[in-house]
Image 1 (tube, rainbow, N blue to C red):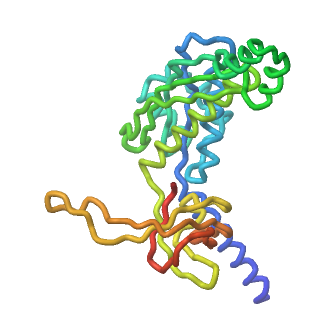
Image 2: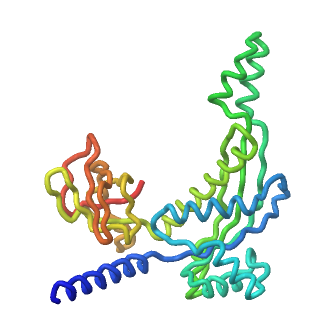
Image 3: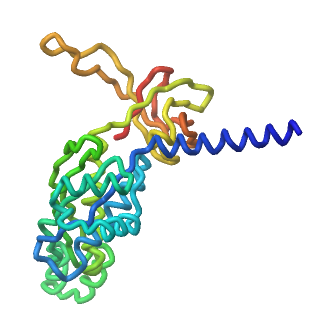
Length: 285
């Protein structure tokens, strides 16, 4: 009997722990983007929206509202112009249960011939090396994609716009779709860096035991197994106009995350790292 009660209590604790972990991550409703770029060869807005969803989810810091769930709310409530209307985006975000809403529009999108590939091809023709273009094509992609989008990141609780930014992506690809997708992916990654700047990651070394470095942040803070963190040691404060604005920091080295738990993680020091101590600070590069 006691064994059954203990098992039941253990199951409840595990479920609660999972719920706490999930609740710790803020959720984002990524609104369908509006395409005003004039580029119509592909589903520009849809591809860019999908790349934003993938990047935000992969960050480990946020969860994202499923597109099907968001689409259902849009249809049921008859929302229009959500790509540009902040108040409607906030209302929709709240209805979908999201903490934040992201909305915006694609302002520029192009796919052109890659100048580098063209130069290599012309050099081959000039010097009579007919196969040089084909050989170089393995290393120099034929097309270059570019995209720019204006985005706003809104707190659904307060309605405050906490980030308004133009982000761009520029990447090459072997085909037109590949070049465009690569550019969209880079733009999404650039936006994610901007979001990380709003809420920068910071952890401390809680203990060092042999080769293991224990840090005081885990999956609840978006720490991912395999990622590399920079270790710095804080020194004297930097004072400007009588106020402490920052701390002097000396880089000690880098660690790689090898084990992740909800509220802590275990790391291993990379080669050429100095002696890492309890109290050192970890941040993302």
